[in-house]
Length: 249
Ligand code: NAP
Image (cartoon, rainbow, N blue to C red; front, side, top):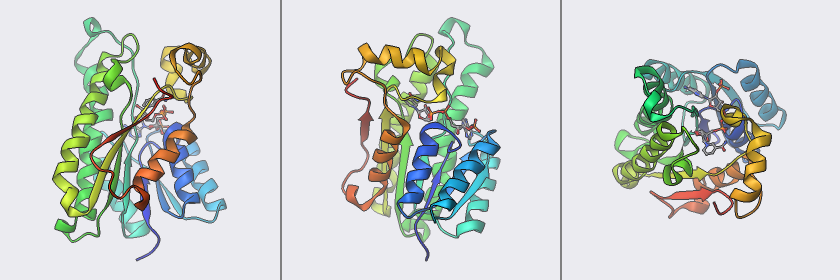
């Protein structure tokens, strides 16, 4: 058995990249999943390697089960074990309910919610003591949108994140006695590319000055600290809960 292995989905940019980098610094071997940003994902891998840790880039659409199965097989081949899954990949899209069609709402749930089931299935099959595993941790990336309803046009996004909160609780009940702790994070307004959808980072940061009790947007690194803590033994009795990382919002 080698050093612990953490798989972070959506780790080419933003919050996922920050978690992957901190995981490398914390002694994990890291799986860096991405969808399209190949160069960015490889840059994250290189940065982790430059810091003296092992990392591998794993391309897969986590909303597609066959691609998730291939990604986990590639992770097995690279590291031979799994200790932590961070279900971070997600998309934001703005469309009102009266503009819903077959594809926009399905795409949202496929990327944000189905991905949780597909990746967690593969992780539980590897980590659960009921499957001969050694236990581990799963961290699910929700959003304060789950309890605030999101910004205008964000009904599908908010509902997808509400589903993650429920999934988080239910999965915790399923696998808690099998050595796997399951928790979620609800980030608030965090400065990442995701905000291009509604006007860009500068506009979001302006809004954060008044909308957030701490008076500012958060950074991806601040979310990463909480993800690494939830994954660690320091959080050994934290299970089935959601931690808001939202500056009081
Ligand atoms: P981001 O900067 O837009 O990055 C999204 C990441 O997810 C990218 O690495 C992207 O890969 C990947 N991704 C998207 N769809 C994917 C798919 N189907 N399969 C695999 N990878 C996929 O977003 P972020 O702000 O870091 O957000 C990360 C998570 O935090 C999301 O779940 C988001 O909902 C949540 N969150 C963010 C905020 C915020 O204010 N930023 C607030 C609350 C919650 P590519 O680079 O290849 O496209």
